[in-house]
Each structure stands twice: as C-alpha cells, then as structure tokens.
Length: 250
Image (cartoon, rainbow, N blue to C red; front, side, top):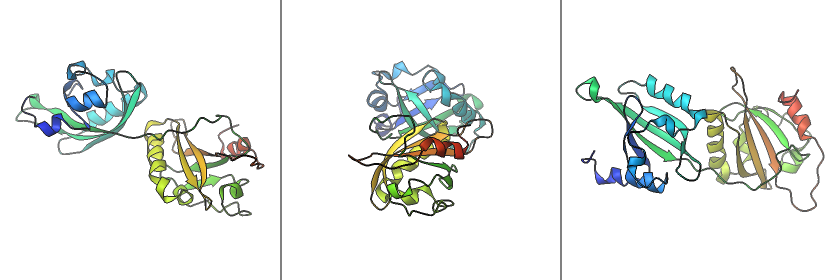
C-alpha cells in the first residue's frame, strides 16, 4: 500500500480497504489516529471488521458487503469502536475493486463521521408537557396527540392540524438538518435517538426523542417532544395518554 497517494493517507475521513473476508488491508493513518484514537494502523490491519463494528449494526454491514456487485456502490451506516471513548457513527460509502483476477478483489471504502448533537439531561419518564407523534420513516406525521399544541406555539382546537404533514415543518429551518440526521440514524440502526431543536412560531426549545418501532414488520418511528420548560410554566395533559393512543403502551 506504499504507493497510495499522500492525500489518501492524510484524509480526515476514515479511508480503508477490506479483503473479501472483511479483514483490514489498509487504513488511513491520520483518521486512524485522530478519529478512532488508534496510535498505529497496525492496531487494525489484519484484524476483522466485526471486531470493531457495534454488534447491533454488524448484520446489516455484512449483508451489504456480501450482496454488492462490481460497479454497484456500497453504502451503510454503523457504529465503529474507538480505542478509548466508545463508538463513533460512520457513514460509509465505496465500491468493490476487481483486478485482473478474483484473487485481487477487495472493498475500497471511506467512512465519514456523523455528528450527534448533545442534549441536556432531562428525565426519561413521560411528563405532562409532552407531545407524542407517530411518523413514517420519511418524517410524515401519521398521528399526534394534540392537548399540548398551544404550548409548542401550534394552532389550538384542531386535533388534525399536523396529520399528513412533515414533522420538519414545525422545526425552525436552522435545526432541521440536526433532526433529519437523528431520524436517519433511528431508522437505520433501530436505536433510540434524541436531539435538541426549536419548534413553533415561538421557537420553543424542545428535546425530541425518536423511538423506532420494534418487531419483524416494524416500519414507524414514535417521537416524544419534550419542551425545555422555563421557570413557572405549566400545562395540562398526559404524555402517557398520548403513548396509549399511539399503541406504544397497552
């Protein structure tokens, strides 16, 4: 791999080459050190991909690699284990390389880190301030509880105001990218995600939890919108009741 050009070796994205058996043949030194916290590429080279990919993501990653064909792009999202501080989400793209014979096949890939927005610590249990909704994977609102609409700066006295609209329509423009990143991660990884955004005409600061549906036929995302309440603010309604209507609680 000594003939690889310097821009690849110094890439900030995680550039790597895998054998057909998913062993590392090459990793870019700079990203190995700066992004993944491994001092030396030798810490990865020769080892199997499954030693570093989060177990919950491994099946989807292996399926993507095994099903790829020459000339078809590879794309997957996974959590990759760093040396010291947990995992980093990588948005991986690439292709399979085929030389003059099958003995020279390999995967050439690049993983770009996906930033996860930090959120303030708040209670996990539903509160009376919550608004619940059921979304399609594309963010279309299929159902929403309506008792707290006024608190979020939405129109009162119309229970169907949000049904059939895109959830990002109530999020201010500057925060929509953050939300869509979390929605994408929730859909792809089947993991609960959370983000901090501002919603409604009053730009109400809100933590949104994205909770993937479970089961073989799962296809929806439940969201819990929990406002960061200011001093002395009070509203009435039950977040748990919203969950029951969504079918999330029995």
